[in-house]
Image (cartoon, rainbow, N blue to C red; front, side, top):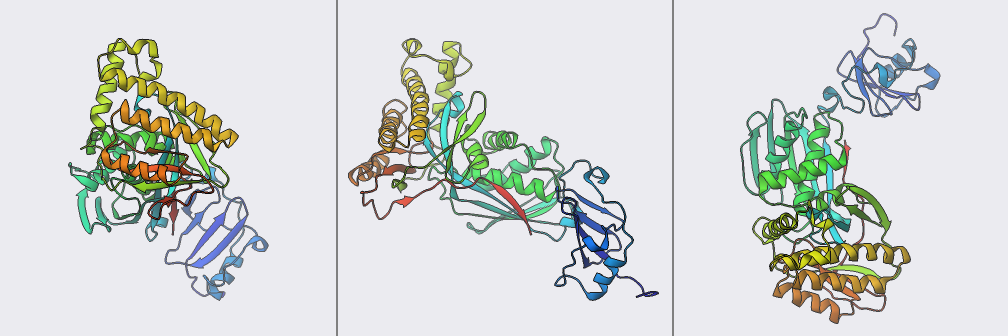
Amino acid sequence: MNGAAREPITFEYSAFSSTTTAICAGRPRANLAFGDGVVWTGPARVAEPQEASISASAATAEAMKMALDVVAQPKPSSRDCPLKRPGAIIRSMASTRVTTAFAPGRVNLIGEHTDYNGGLAIPFAIASGVTVRATPVDGRRIEAVASDLQESDSFDLADIGPADGWRAFVRGTAAELQRAGRELSGASLEISGTVPRGAGLSSSAALAVALGLALCALAGELEPDRVELAKLCCLVEHAWVGAQTGLLDQLASLFGERCRAVVIDFRSLAIRSVPLELPGHRLVLLDSHESRANAASGYNERRAECAQASALLGLSSLREATLDEVNQLPPPLDNRVRHVIGENARVVEAVQALDRRDAVVLGHLLDASHESSRDLYEISTEAVEAARERLLQAGALGARLVGGGFGGNILGLMPPDAEGLPDAREVRAAAGAGVTVS
C-alpha cells in the first residue's frame, strides 16, 4: 500500500455511535453523515481504528486498509459543520438519492366544518395517502408526473404560473415554499396516490403535504415546522386551487399516530392525541358513489356564510358564539351557527367517550353530528342519506358523513356482532406524514 496512489474514500460517520464506514467513492474528499442528521463534506476524518466498522459488502479490501491507515483526528461534531443549519442534507450527497415523501389521507371522526370557525375536531390519519418520489435534476426546473393520471407538467422555479387540477398543487406548493424563504432546487417528481379523489378523505391535503416535505428534503432544507407547513399547504388550496379549506386535513395528515386520533383546537392550534381503541368495534367507510370537489361544491359558500355570521355578531370566529346570540341572525346563518356550536360540544363529549371506551355514546354522537350536518348545515345529499341508511340497517351504532359534504364517504361504527356490508371497508388510525431517502 505504501507508495501506491490512494483511491478516494467516502466515510459515513455516526457522531453519536463513534462509527465510521469506509467505502470506495469517486471523490478525493469525504462526505460524513452524522448521527444527529448533519452531513458534512471535507477532508477525511475517522475515529480510532479500533472504533471503525468497515462494511465489506460496500468496500474493497484496499479501501478497508486505507480506512485503518488514516491518522485519527478529533471526532467532528455538528458545530464543525460548515452548513447554515443542522439537519440539512448536503446536495452533493443527495445527488444520486431518491427522496420519498408520504402523506396520509384522513377520516374526521367528529367535528365537521369547525376548523375554519376556530372550533374543535377529532380526525385521524389513515393508511391510504399520496406518495411523491423526488430526484434531483440539473437547473431550476420541476418536472412532475402524475402516474395515476398519466399526465405531466413542467415549469421553471423562477417563473411559476397558474394551472388547474393537480398541477395547481405542485406549482402552488413550490411557489409558496420559495415565498417563505426556502431555497428549492430542480427536481423530477413522480406522484401517485391511494386515496380516492373526491371521497371526502382529504386527498388534496395529502398531495400538498407530500409535495412540501419532498421538495424541502430534496433541496437540503430542514423539515418545516409542521404547523407552519400545514398553514402553507392550506394557503396553496386557497390561493392556487380556489378551495377555502381549513387546517383540519393538513394537521391530521402531519400529526397522525397509529391507533390514536388527533384532538385539534383550531383557536389555539393546540394538538394532542387520544387513544382510538374500542375493543371489538370497527370503524368502516361506505362510499356514496357521489364524488365531490371542494372548490366546485357548496364548501366555499358555507365558509362565506360563517364569516358573514361572525361579522354580524361582532366576533372574530364562531367559536365565541352562544346560542343566545343565534336568534339575532337571519336564516340560514342562524342554523349554520347552531351547527358549529353543537358540533364543538359533541367533540368534547366524544373525547370523554373515547377515554371511557364508550362505543354506545360515541355512536349517538356520530348520529347527532350527521343530523346537524344534514338539517342545519345542509351539506348532505340523497346518495349520502341512502348510504348512511344502509350502514344503520347493517347494525351501525352510529353513522355520519365525513369531509366537506355534498358526497363522499359515510363513517359507521360497527359493534362486534354486526356483519357489516361487503362494500364497506374498515379504517384504522395510521401514522402521519414522513420522508425517507434511499
